Structures are given as structure tokens and as C-alpha cells.
Image (cartoon, rainbow, N blue to C red):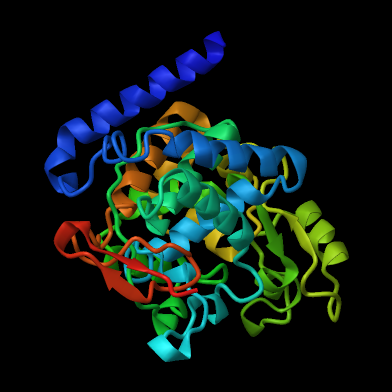
Length: 349
């Protein structure tokens, strides 16, 4: 219990320090947004995430934070990734875009959380805020920092399949990754800190097998992979083998949120090309500096990760009376009832 108090006090300090310097940038969101309308929102979400983590799926924390990333990087944090195909409303789902197809997961847990929220606080908590809170609780429950979420996002009514095709990919170079982050006004430290979410989770052979045998059409493996790690991966993912086989992204503590991801990069044991590029790209001293810093100092990593998560969570917000509070995260609402800020769409199903 004492350790939990220390963690929460430290997390609160992170937020005070971070928001104290940039509070004007986050004025559209508030940490007290649901205090009156849905005061138990965080506990409801945490209880379900904890139940799934403990009893059925140790991967779910990493999966939920990945949903949040992939949502925010396309159209901003508006819940667009959660929408299914809906020809009647012109929605082509982002779930079928190459970076998400057969890899984005956890949607059934999102649905379970949404159903619980609708029972407790009908038409109140947006799907985009649901993902925000679920991501933070996933990190905390896995041993990482907790922080005070800034809330008040509303859900969009469109998806962007073409935008989702351009999500940062595991086989991209550092220059491409930097450009994609900069397009969203996320800088080098954001790139390195947010990549640290790969400290937990799994990766499929298809996402890194090109590094193992014919990297960049050379007929040879990626020279930045540690020899013993390369042999392990080649045995796991042989040429012509099952491309859907999965392995831990972090070899040392695969289900724990810590700074071992960066130590793995220093040992040339980053699973994805996009990971190892952070440490092995010649001349990338500005990036390598942060990898070394976060490997040596977990507190520094946690502080930067929290700051970058809050920054990412503020991308292209829909707030106020814009958008909607989706009643089912998979589909837009059908009929508008009420007007102004009190108006909500309700489903006909």
C-alpha cells in the first residue's frame, strides 16, 4: 500500500510539473470533466482492464494503448479507429487498413467497457475518452506511471481509412518516423518516449521477418541485430513459415511497463526495425541521447512518457457541442435528440 501511494504521488507530481508549464495548450480538456456526471468512470474502466489482464489476456494493456495511439494518429483522438464499416453513413473502417488489419485488437474489451459505462452513466463518456483512460490504466496496472487524465473529448462521425494506411510502420527508417511524428507536431523526444510503449506487448513474424533473411533486398539479415537474437528469431520465423506467429517485443519483462525496452536497443535486440533505428541509425545522436538517458533512468522515461502521452492525447480535439457521445463505439449514433450542448444522438438499434 505504501508503494502504491508513492507511485500515485509521483504520478501526480508528473502532471503538476507538466501541466504547470503548458496548461494553456490543454484548456479544452479538464481533469475534472466527469466529476459530476460520471464520477466512477476511471474505476469502472480500471476494474475491467484489471480483470482481463489477470484472468484472460496479459496482452490487453499493450493492445489498448496501441488502439489509443492508432486512433490519435489518424484524425486526432476521436474514436475513429473503433468504427466498423457502415456504407449507409459512408464509413470505410480504419480497422481494415494495413497497419491495423489482423493486428489491432482489444475491441471486444472496449465494447465491454462501453456497455458498463452506458449502464452507469448513459450517453456521458465518449469512446475517445474511454481509450484515453484505458491506456493510462493499462500502463499503471502493468507497473508504469499513473497520471491524471485530461478529459472532455467527443467522438467523431467519420473514419479515415486512407489516413490509417500511413500510420508509423515497424519497417520504417528513422527519418520517415521523424517526419510522421513532426506532421502531428510531435518532436524527437515524443518519438523516443512513445516508442517506449513497446516495453510490453507482442509482435507478429510478418512485421519483422524482412530483417531476418533479406534485409533491404541484400540477401542478408539486418546487420544491426544481435547474432544470438537473430538466430532465435530465424528459428521462430523461418522463411515460408507462419507469418502470424507472435513473440514478445521486450525479451526481459514482456508484460511489465518499465525501461528495459531501451536496454534492449542498446544490446541490438530491438524486435522491429523502427525500434532498433532509434539506437543504430548512424549520426542520430539526438535520438540516441534519449535512448541512453531512458535506459539509465527509468524515472526520466516515465516523466517523458507521461508528457508525450498528454501531448498526443490533445491532437485535433473534438469538444464542446461538436461531434457526439457515441452510445456504441462501433457505430455512429442515428438520431439527434435535444439541442445545443445537451443534444445527444441515440441509436435506433
